[in-house]
Length: 194
Image 1: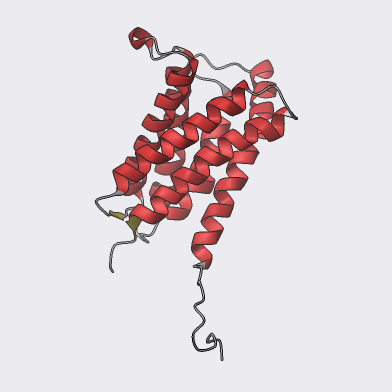
Image 2 (image 1 turned 135 degrees about the vertical axis):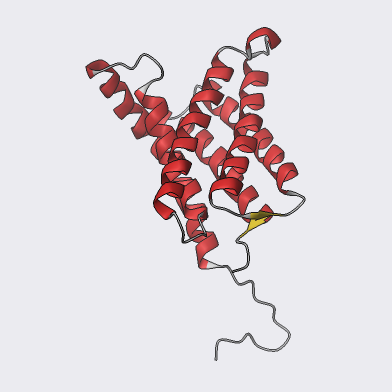
């Protein structure tokens, strides 16, 4: 009944795959309102070790992009918490490196954002492989580097652009990086056999 006519090929999309990419886009565009909420929280109670913006954006990324990759049924609560915390820590670290231009390396603005994009994608990949857990194909690290490179370049352009509403422009930078990282995980890792 659901078969294609003879000679016609049909692309079948796993609904889980489409849902995970949709959540990555939602997380990317949700970074702007999460950042605004973080700024308001900073006015009420600033943190000595980070910022509310980093925590909220990282937690949103962890919850919407990393947590859906969990395949194991055991210790699910621990895995969820670990991936949300990983999202926060990795986002905070990558932003810090970009802001200080990678310290003694003294990378320029674009170089530091792209390098942070690559490092962030690799750290996220490692955390997800470890905590979800997933089995990786040999190409996972190449995909992660490519995702970080492409996403970092778009993100740098987005934060440098002086056009359009900031929520859309900056949200697009976040969304592209997060979609590329989610795609790298989709194409380079899979659930282990039961």
